[in-house]
Image (cartoon, rainbow, N blue to C red; front, side, top):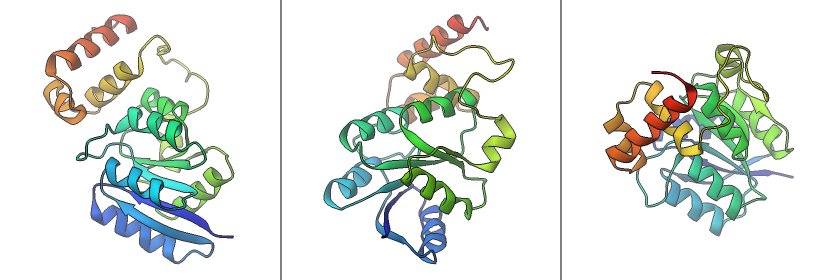
Length: 198
C-alpha cells in the first residue's frame, strides 16, 4: 500500500527538496504540489490523498493560511492527516498547531530525512515533533515549565503574538494575515493584557 501525499509550500525550492527526498522512498506517492492554500484545497478535493505536508503560512490565494487553514482543513477533510513544516518556533503557536489537528510538526531547519518519519507517524495517527523543535523549545503536550499560561488567549491572539514575537512588525502581521492594522494591534494589546506583560 502506498501513502498518497500532497506537498504545499510557497517556495518552489522547498517543494523540490521534499519531492526529491520522498520520491526515493518506497511506499510514498506524491499526488500533487501547491504554492498556496487554494491550490492545496483543490488538490485534496480532486485527488485521493492520505497525508498533506504543508507550510503554515503561504501568501496568495483567497483562503486564510495559518491556524484558520488548519481548522478549515480538519473540518472539510477529516480523514487527511496533516504534517506542518514551519520556521516558527514559538511554543504557544506550535501547541495551537497541534490542537488544530496537525499530527506532526517539523522545523524547516530539520534534516529533510525526518520528513519520512513524520509522514508515517501522521498516517498512523501518531504524534511527531521534529528534532529541532524538541531541542529548541521542548514542545510537550502540557504546559512548559516556567511558561505563562496561554489558555485564555483566542486563536487569533496567539497567531498575532506568535508572528509579532517572531520579528514581524504590526503592519507586516496585518499584511500577512490580511487584516487591518487596527485589528492586529487590538489582538496584540489584548493578548499582552491577558498575559500581564507590557
